[in-house]
Length: 110
Image (cartoon, rainbow, N blue to C red; front, side, top):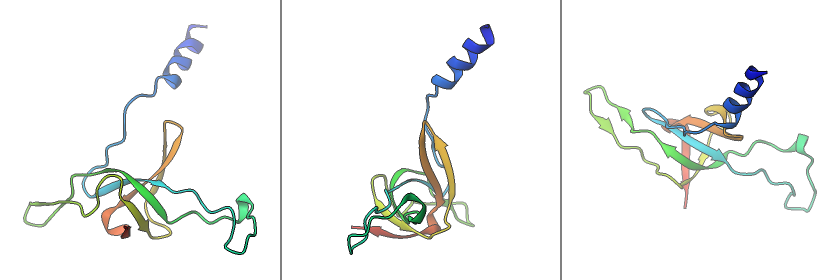
């Protein structure tokens, strides 16, 4: 019975944060549109994964061949567009995120 309590404590005590390394960037995908421009309601199975998201955290930047570190071109809270198959999907604290390399980000939305 003690092991059940220990398991429960571990699963509910998820604390911490995700810090991307190097030129990696942590992105939270924006919600997919549920209604088309013509007013058609899309079911969940017909929605495409959005290619737009909000930057949550940024790594320190890429290390160049001469050993210097270049600063990332995006910063926290930037709204970005990335390629369709970019990054690695991760779940943390009940939320889904995407870790992408800086070169997979196509644009910053102003």
